Amino acid sequence: MTINAVTTTALSGMQAQMTRLSATANNVANVDTTGYSRLSAQFSTDPSGGVAAHVSEVDPAQGADPGGDMLALTEASIGFSANAAVFETGADIWQVLATIKRE
Image 1 (tube, rainbow, N blue to C red):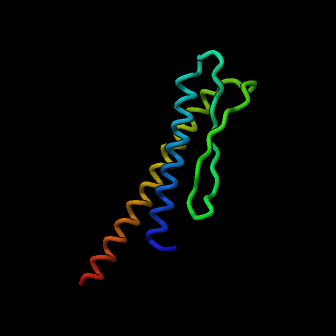
Image 2 (tube, helix red, strand yellow):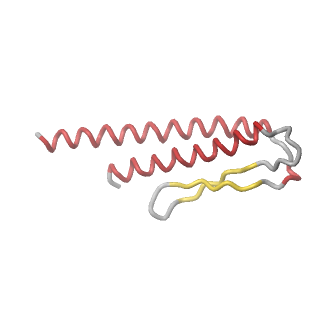
Image 3 (tube, rainbow, N blue to C red):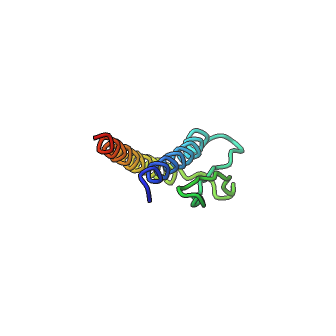
């Protein structure tokens, strides 16, 4: 795997976590809204590398899950931070390699 592939994969991970965060934030904001159907984000592997998140409505019979939503917010935050660290490390390595090549 190349450095560029690592940073691209990390970027897709950050985008997927942002999608998850948005869906979960909607759940928290609308917990008392009559007729609101909770949203759930599912992750899938992108054939070209990386990950994607797809949002779908949860069966209304399942009802609200504030505890699960708060956990999902925490997980999305941690997942985003982990992918950001990988992205930054890949960018740093790329910069070091470019410096070596110039010299």
